[in-house]
Amino acid sequence: MIEITTYQNYYIAKIKFAEANMEQSDLFKQELINELDAGHTHILISFEEVNYIDSSFLGALVTSLKHAMAIGGDIAVYGLNENISQLFELIRMNKVFKVFKDLPGSYQAGWIA
Image (cartoon, rainbow, N blue to C red; front, top):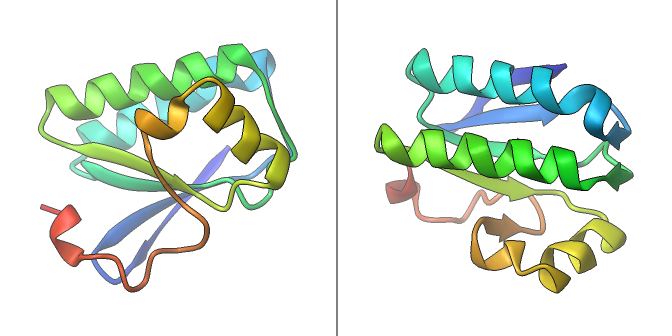
């Protein structure tokens, strides 16, 4: 469901499906929490392959962020298409998550503990 790789000091969680909806939300949340608990406490989630996202998946994303913050971690997102980016702005998720257009190669590595 997600593919974990590393890039510089980041853990990248690439979502491997086009529609992020209720069918995937619980499994996605569990996989992400498992990665966080395994020590990958600062994760960038790639939405590059995602065309659609629904409220249940957004809820799973927020729950995962709360878990990350509880263990001293963080979650950021990147690669949102125009529609998902507009949704994030509309419901102010861009105030909850760090949102990057692309993989933040020039972003301060200090984000990663």
